[in-house]
Amino acid sequence: MKTNVLPLAALALSALAVVAAADTAGDHHLLDSGKSVKWGAPPPILPAGAKFAVIDGDPAGKGLVTVRLKMPAGYKIPPHWHPTDEHVTVLAGSLGIGMGDTLDPAHGQTLTAGGYAVAPATMHHYAWTTTGATIQVHLQGPFALTYVNPADDPSKSAKP
Image (cartoon, rainbow, N blue to C red):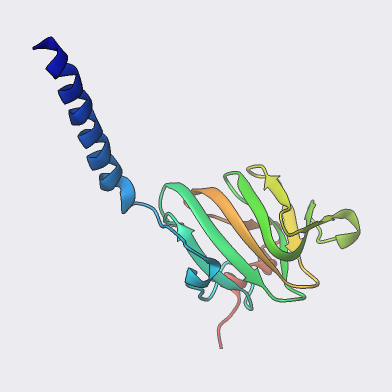
């Protein structure tokens, strides 16, 4: 009788594991290829001209968030900071990044596809691309961005 309990318990635990995995499967996206990404306009806090996609999470909510930003050649993000760490991976093209209060490519570094950088919370940093770039950003939500110079904030500019 004791020998039958062990296989039954293992079967029950396996069933519970499957139910638990199925229960959380809808919480996160599965991206089978880059063609599945749904691109749109970036949030108003970012300069116009780029394309933006939420890969996972809710940028306005708490928790882990993954977004992508596709920037055209010549795109710049002026010096800014975030309240949480920002983890950036270059997926395509090249991205220049630098730390400080002035966008100065001479004092930055260029990352190419596969490159990775972390901008710790509250660190003033900036980004630019001369060739165009697609990046993936991981962060802890809610997403927030504060420009060092408030005049650089495109969401504050007058709308015609």
